[in-house]
Image (cartoon, rainbow, N blue to C red; front, side, top):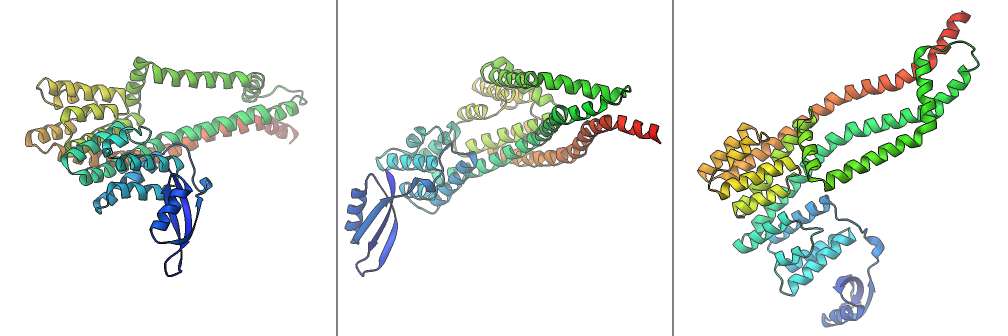
Length: 398
């Protein structure tokens, strides 16, 4: 299937144009003639208008909201996916959407059609849609799914910004320091060599570091590259290392608090969305564990799943994990006993998402002066060390 642009004349002679899906130009021409249009001309839509590549999380969020809105308006699923494909700016997204549309036209259920596209629809998405199809509340489920995706993306962006800002500043500081050491300090060292006097200790230390960096800069880059690759590889492939790093992350000062709150918010939002969609609680917990984003949280959720399957409560293993604050386990316990678990989970998610917002804002306010001090000491210290001999010379001359 492809997208074709067409032009034709109506029965009254009025010029018309548009776009149509088809496997070839002949099929599109035949369809236009059946509609009573005269002198049709067809050309394949230029691929340059669309960018390809990976489907981003934001694009999935927008697609989910569009699909929920169109289904809520009463449009057939085929029309929903056709309109979504026409509005897609990502070629990969357009192709996936058209494949799902073709499967639905062929009589496949929406769930089965989405299962074929794991690059766009994760297990959570598919399970919720399946629950909505089976219970006849697809519109409600899609709306909940759209809210979930929007909230989840916003939370992830907040946490990412909290982690990225200090790292980016420190990397820039490292690069600036490297440039000064390799290119600027040697110029001063060459100038000072003609002084014939002993240089101040700070200046000698900086020049010594500069000479070492000039001779071994490749070693520094190799160590950083090898270390980053080794860490990334171990984190992906070594389950025990992954678990210990996730455990350590939750214990970090300030950052650990943000990660913990975001994990609680994600757990509550995902679990509440699945329960509200009518997904069985054991299946819901399994999906929640897979989307936890932290191995320690995943373990706590799976322990809770085992607890429920053995006839015990959900809250005991959550409380024992030490991840979930008492307020959270108490609210979940109340939800269990009153039959309003999804309502309590939604309240927990709203509260902790707001807590993450406040924590990130506080972290930014704290880091800004701290980073300025670090940069001032680092860069300012280098500048002072390089100018100390010149200051001494000026004192001698005067």
